[in-house]
Image (cartoon, rainbow, N blue to C red; front, side, top):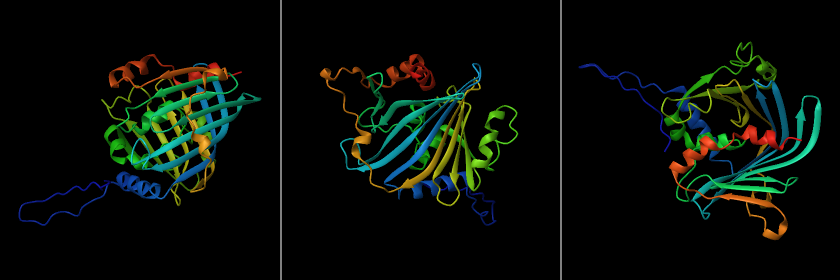
Length: 291
């Protein structure tokens, strides 16, 4: 499935030139191989939103969970994702919160226990696979790019960069300089949406840092055209540990529970594209939930 890109150049009556491998493709293939060995992943997560126009900064802290299911009701194999935030920092003020986000291969769930609000949206048809960057748009999940290498290359130009590039002395985003000391020993990749991909209006670029030895994710930064930033840092990442299935439960609360429930089934791609225009970005919904 995952093949290196070879450029073959031949001249008449002369032997073919030496094949060259695209470094970005080779690295993504390495990610794919490493990812195939992961049945679960956990880690502490810090999710930071920096809104340039409002000079607003929010930091949420919690835990990230990922598991692989095989021969399930949706596909032969798919990934479940969950994030649970328990603290919110606004400037110097920190408060306890409860915000849970789950994606089970089809349904994206926002569970807000303090407000007793349950939102459930079907992001993809039952017989299809969600594009990884679509999921990254919905919530601060770590998305396994290596499992979707070909689809990522279809929509993005991918570059391998020095680990400090874009963080140190960045005139456009000086607020990223604090991350320099956190990325020693990593490999950075940068994804830039291709024209016509459908993502070019969502963000200017996405940068992701992987541990150079383990190839486990440590950081990703998304920048949109307004100058807003979304930063996700992962700490103490562990793989192939046993996880409680309840972490990924997308069951709708019963009517007698007192929860407010909103369910939005899949209505086809045309409706989904229209919904994307009208749906609030995640950071706006998070602002509404901020104490």
